[in-house]
Amino acid sequence: MIAVVGHEDLRAETSALVERELRVRLERYADPAPGLVRAGSGPSVAFARAVRAAGRRLVVLLPARGALPAPLPPPAVEPARAVTRLADEVRLLAYDPRDRDARVRADEALVRQCDRLLAVWDGSPTDGRDATAHLVAYARTHGVRVEVVWPVGAARSGGATAAAGATRVCRPRARGTAGPRQGGHTGTRG
Image 1 (cartoon, rainbow, N blue to C red):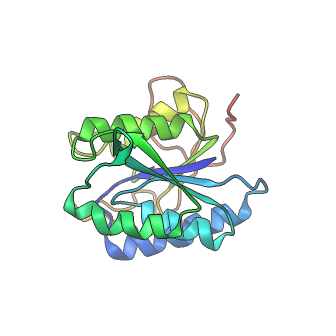
Image 2 (image 1 turned 90 degrees about the horizontal axis):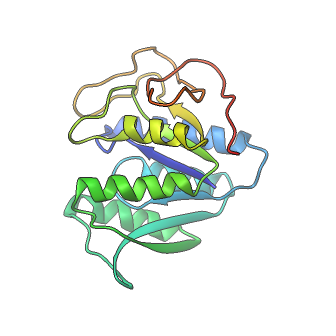
Image 3 (image 1 turned 45 degrees about the vertical axis):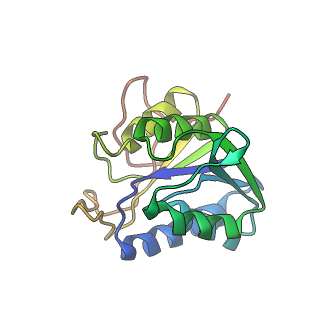
């Protein structure tokens, strides 16, 4: 599977740039692996659209309380609807979508299910709100191939922009590091 994680505070124009870059990458991969995404705000809708446009299957993870879907916070409702409309398969995953730590644990579970992770990430460190850097490091320590997607001109609503001025592709790093690297990827899941 190919999964996505990333910043939840993307500007609207950045979402379009990210969607275009995700589609290019998905069309380039030779394997027919499906896309896997946790429904919510951030890059999930851009990824879902890119997966479908690339002719791949889409698997969506929804939060659950027991055997029923859990209510989503208001900002995540519309993105979740858009993603589930595009899904070939919807799976329930037990977590509280209103709890940041629970969302991070859900994303860690998502990462453990994939062979490749596309990280919509500007290279910033993890803070009290955004855990993208943590998830990149988590994937690398679990042998998951990571590619950072941050197109030229990308920005977050908080004002972050592409530092290197180019889309970055990352190589897995040694345990405990999380910064992006320029160049191709070499790691494989094993």
